[in-house]
Image (cartoon, rainbow, N blue to C red; front, side, top):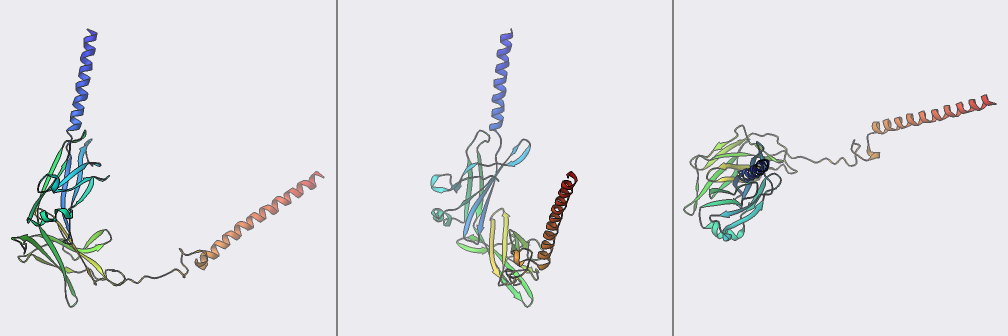
Length: 293
């Protein structure tokens, strides 16, 4: 009887472990697949992988995906990418696929990952209509404007697109500052928007130049379109060379006089105390010798 129970227990444990393994293998891998066109020249795709692990949505690293254009075949392979420690990967459309790219105004991109021990197979698609974004400047006296235009490739010509949400701003370090009060602008029947530039006295480079940026973000048809343009609308920033001047961060002999004076005073006090202590010790020793005699 005990042997039968032991066998049943072992079988139950085996089935339980197998069930846990099956559950782990069935974890769903979520893939965020996006298309980008930078300055109307560089089309590329980004992949972000995450999954719900231990009740939390977490980025997944080390996932290998094959990215294809239009058809899942070796000749249509855009690239084989592996996600980094943030779950991100980038696939740039190679020049070998230029003929295929030029052949149609629309393309379907597919990101495929094979099944692993932790995750099931994933297959994510996005369809993109070829489009481009243009940026220009318009000045009327003291008023400055950023002109943005969105065009779609249709019937072998570029045609303006209405009702596309766009953004216009200024590139500042790793972020984009809005050009004016409005955060977004919608294109009119000519595919155009005019954004007023209201950033007065914005620091530029050595020549007073700033980088203007126009964007279409996460559009269902066109993906992400980004374009930049240099404009002399900033304030010229003159670099001041403090190398030969007395500053807190200069070399020892170029430090401020008050700082040097304070340092020497502190050193003098310390040495005075040490000398006085030596004098006192010597005096005590002499008194001790005289007492013994």
